[in-house]
Length: 396
Image 1 (cartoon, rainbow, N blue to C red):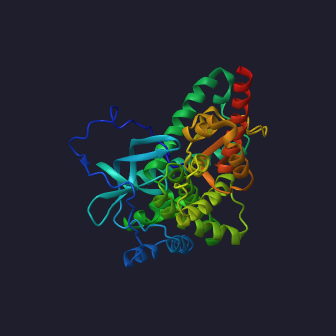
Image 2: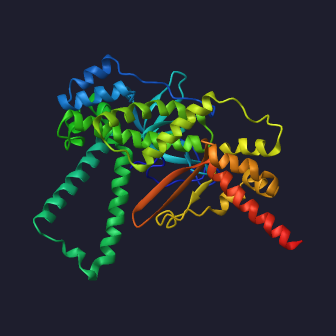
Image 3: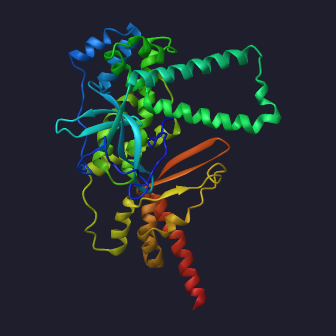
C-alpha cells in the first residue's frame, strides 16, 4: 500500500534542510486551500498513447477518464514540498518528483500519488536514465526469483554471514525505494513515451495480462494514495482538499464494486470519511447551543487525536488512549461530571457523526485503522465523568 509520505528521508524545514542556493529556486507559499489544476489529456497525450502497446494505451485512457493527470511537459526534478502526517505538523521534505508548472508559473510536484505545491525546485535529472535503473532492478529481482525456484540457494544466507546479508538487504531496499521515487511507473509512462521510450514504459507494466486487469491495478494503486490523502486532510481539518481528492476515490470505489474487488480495511475506513465529509458540507452549525453540555458535544466532531494502540486492537480490547481523555473538549465534559450524563448518554445512543480522530492498531502483521465516532467520545466522557464523580464523593 502506498503511503502519502512515501520514501526518502524527512527533514525539518526550520533547521536541517540544506540552504537553498545556486540551482534552487524558491516560490511563494500557496494558500492552504489551494487546489492543483486539472491536467486533462490533449492531442499531445493521444499521440503519445498511440506509441504504446494497445493494452497499456487503453488502460491509460481509462485512467484519464477517471481524472488521472496526463503529465504533459513534466520533468523529473528535486523539490522541497510540505508533507502532512496524522496528528503531526507538516514537514518540509526534499524529494525527487515529476514536476509540472501551473498557469501562474508556480510548479506542482507529484508526490506519493497526489499533487503538492512546490516550495522550492532544484536540479533536474534524466527521467529515462532513472527509469532504466528501476527496470534493471526489476530484472535483477526476476532473475533471483527464478534462481530460487530452481532450488539454488545463495550461500550468503548461511548464519556465518547473516548479519552482512541483512545489511546488504537494507541497502538494496533503500536503493529500490529511491529508484521508485525517481521513476513511479504509473506516472512515468507517458512522459517516457514523449521522450521516445515507449519500450521502457511498456517494460515497467509488462506483468499485466490484459487491459481490464492492468487498468484495475492502476486504479487501485492510485486510490491507495488518494485515500491516504483524504484521511490526513480530514484528520487535520482541510475539508476542501479532502473533498477535492474524494471525487476520484468515489469513482474508483464504484469501479471496484462493479468488478467485485474487495476493499482493504483502510479503504473501507475511507468510505466512512467520505460520508462524513458529505454531512459536514451540508450540516448547519451547532455551535450556538445555549446549553454548555450541548455546545461541547457539538464540538466533539472536531476532536483530532492520533491514537495508536498496537496489540490491544488485535485482541479486541479497544482501551481508550490517554490522548483521547486528555483532549480539551473531552476533558471539559468529564469535568462536568453528573450534570453532563444525560446529554452524553443520548449522544452515545444516537449520534452518528464522526470525529476527526483515528485509531490505529495491529499485531503480528495485522493492522487496523478506524475513525473514532463521536458516540464513542461521549461514552468515554460519560464513563470517566462517572468515575470522577464517584472519586469526588468518596473524597468528601
